[in-house]
Length: 206
Image: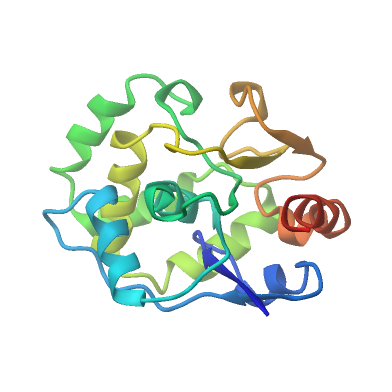
C-alpha cells in the first residue's frame, strides 16, 4: 500500500479524506507535537518529518495543514505534494497588511485570538459548526502560533505541487487564488463536494 501523509487543518478529518483516496493508498495522519514558541513553520515541519521517520509516497495538506505540507516539500524528492483550501502567498490573504497584523497578534493573549476566530471566522453556517467543534478543543497557544505562521510564512513550495480550491470558499476567497484547480464547494471540500474531490485525487495519485 502507498502511504499518503496527511496534515489536517482546523476541522479536517482523516477518515473522510482517506475514503476519497484511489485504491492502493492509505492515509497516515499522526498526532502532531505542539510547536515551540520560538520556531517558525519551516523549522517545525523539519522537526515533524524527522520525528515521524515514515517512508511516504505523497503529502496532502488541508487548510492550515497545507502550510506544514508546503514546508515539508524539500523532503519529498519528486513525490506528489497536494494542497487543498489554503493560501500560499501574501497576495492571497483576504485582508491588507498581513505581516503588520501578525506583528500585532504577538501582543494579544492567545485565548482572545481563539475567541475572535470562533466568532468572526467567515464560514458558511454548516462549515462554522465544524470549525468551532475542532477549535474549541485546541490549545489556544497552538492556535495563535498557527495563525501567525499563516500570516508571516506565505511563500510557494520549492517543488512542483497540485492545488485545489473551492469556488465558494469564504475563508480564503476564490477570487484571490489565481492558480490551481477550482471545483464547486466552500472550504471543507472533502465534505461538500466529495465526488469531484475524489476524481481530483485519483488524477493526481494514479
